[in-house]
Length: 373
Image (cartoon, rainbow, N blue to C red; front, side, top):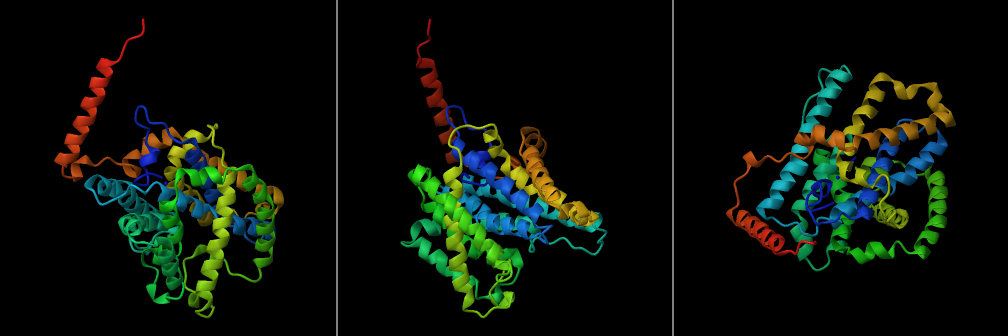
């Protein structure tokens, strides 16, 4: 709900000596995960028109921003053993662990003893890990074909008219959000620098204002399902031909708002920059509190119907997910979120030799350095 790199958590680990992390992407990841958590909190109190308006605006771009970043840091992904290992340890294992944990939480926390444990029906926000696995595995394909972005849009459109795809592994979302991942694969550092221009920032303000007006207008006219990209048009009670129209329209709006979001992400180090390395922890964990609030009826409290209550919930959600991204949480749960699992994989002789060669080169250079006196 949340995960750059050649695998979802590669950039979440401490940078090797001499390799500087890019503060821009850490800042973007942190701000995006805050919006994810706040959006999930707002989703429980949508009876308020102002809250739903803000919810619709945020849902247009918070996951697209995450997906673009994931695609951007997947550019070097291929099917080499080390990348497959990282895919397993960084995506598959966390998915299995947390899907099981959330299923058990539903069974015992919500007094639902018949609730089963299945890995084919992702819980809530865990669809992103399923999607990331599929997108990463197919990355060599997108890097090979001549026009990957139009092809990804065509697949998104086909998904929107194919209810027979069903709910297994949230394949609708895999297809309908695919263009953002492919876009990330095609981007270069200069593209992110361009969106930081002053002119883009100034233009983003009226764009955001217009998006807010459209979101308010859309409440009685457009179902939220169109923003989730989890259903075909027929499942939303619309004729099939509206699927491609709505997919292209909503993805286009999402792209514009994502650009506006990136335009305002700070490029310098901020107090929250280091938290960007732990966004996957905040993404995986924050939904326990959302579900606990639902199970206990906490979101039905009358105070949340007041503006002060909604503001307090917003601040609380942002604070909680911030704590969940901190180093102590990372250290405590790294064994299940970013496990090493060296015991589970064969040693690649070629990779080991390359590592020894790199270490040897570093040692030679270190010994040859002059010592200041």
